Amino acid sequence: MKPVSALRAMPVRRRVVGALLVVALMVLSAIAVVGFIGPPVSGRADEGERQEVQLATADAVTALMTFRPDTLTAAQETVGARLTGRLLLEFRSQGPGVVLPTAVESGAQMTAQVLATGVADMDDNSARVLVFVNQDITLPAAQPQQQVVAVTRWADMRKVDGNWLLAGLQPVGPG
Image 1 (cartoon, rainbow, N blue to C red):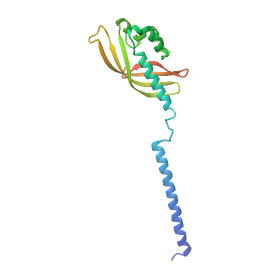
Image 2: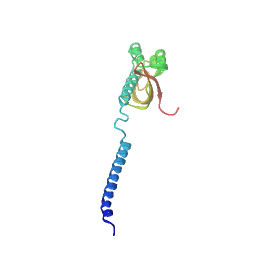
Image 3: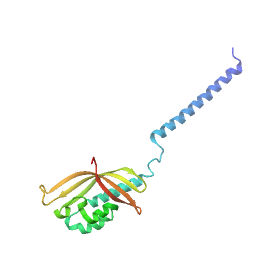
Image 4: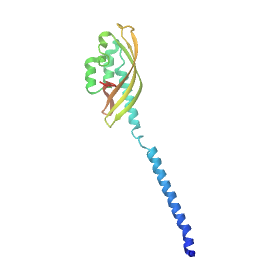
């Protein structure tokens, strides 16, 4: 037979061990939830910046890819304000020819509609954005004269004086 003091001590030990197990399970559950869901503010701090660069990308790409023969001079100022770097220099010298070679000579008209954007890579001063665009192109000498073309481009964005500007536009895919 066990002494009486040993019998009384056993339920207390079981309660302490049981309470410790409950606490341990709660801590492990909390760690699992945070690990699965993430901390409550994770990724949200830069969400506004992501949206800002996506809007700036859509605006710049739309402006660059939308032109008519009668608006080329006025468009160069408004489009140029959305560009930077080499793309700005090329646009100043070639105009819409940056997007559609011989656009000026052929009297081409183009309207772009950005369907979607997605940020692939981003830091404080640069971003690479995937852009899906429908281009409505009219070439007077072509048959048919009007075509709608879906294109996907990588837009390289740079932050200059607090504004996101388009620095480059490349086709997606091998090459």
